[in-house]
Length: 269
Image (cartoon, rainbow, N blue to C red; front, side, top):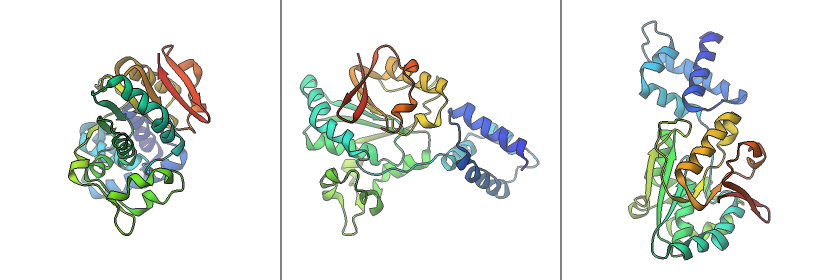
């Protein structure tokens, strides 16, 4: 595969998903593509042309190209804020109605299960949605099985007691069917204007996403979230490391940047 062919594939990934692969990730993407080209019969067709004709193959490539590293109760300080302020505040307003939570880049599901378990511990009914462009990680989310390394981080340990009922001796986690059924899963491309985003969501987690997008795409996603998904007074959380990458110029006027101690978040006015 020559350089022009590879760059055409990278351009296709960006145009279809908004993702701009880092230089460090391009080596792995190239290796995967070269392996796939040996496994399938292209009949002389360039791989980038094959991708345009075959959505299933494009999904396979995206599954390989997207990085999915996460663990339970990641960025513990955000979950402390949810427990002490955000969730109780929303519960008081909703009374008996369910709180809607959306993990918009859910990866393999540790984040949405963390949010669900915390809400459950506070006696809050929820409607939880986990979305990702990567179908492979969504399948893992549906199974609810996690290796012990997802619970060995010091960050998040404050809330590991919520995992205890579902842990085995080796500290791996297995959620029963009744817990897994509480999480709705959906493949969703955040960068597609054709996608239907969930409506009237109270809490949205969209962490470790914006770092992969151009400033223009970040602006487009934020505007769509605010206009279509986040309810008035709703909360949007991004990764603490991403706050600096979100230029104030792209933040919609009805989305306010807030802070509690060292925790930053956004709230719809």
